[in-house]
Image (cartoon, rainbow, N blue to C red):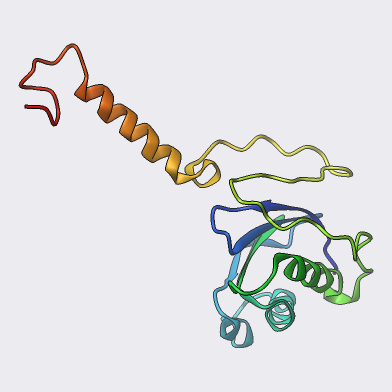
Length: 169
């Protein structure tokens, strides 16, 4: 069966991209961390996913692939360009199982911009429930910033005596 990419979502890793699909691709997580794992899969791995992973590794210059539910995450080699990777991943998914080509094939999506920006096309599918915020989405630097603010508040606390203030003696 062929799958279509509905949208792409940036990740904190500049060499990884989450691809939202038009329907589920797997019931549980199926990961290929290296091309060799796709060529010599674990017993019981879905043959359609193995074939798709081999095709993506061979054509798209990927370093790893993770399938789960209605999305997949692909990691590219540093020197690969996102524009080329996206085009090849779309073609690989559309050609899986001999299905029809993707209707938007040939249209370019901009490369990921980083910073957690999310681009999503929702036409044709019901809205997904809101996702809880996490440090992976907002960026780990926000957590560090909050900790530093907290420490500074403790240092300058008017409730502490001069000898109890953190870092000030």
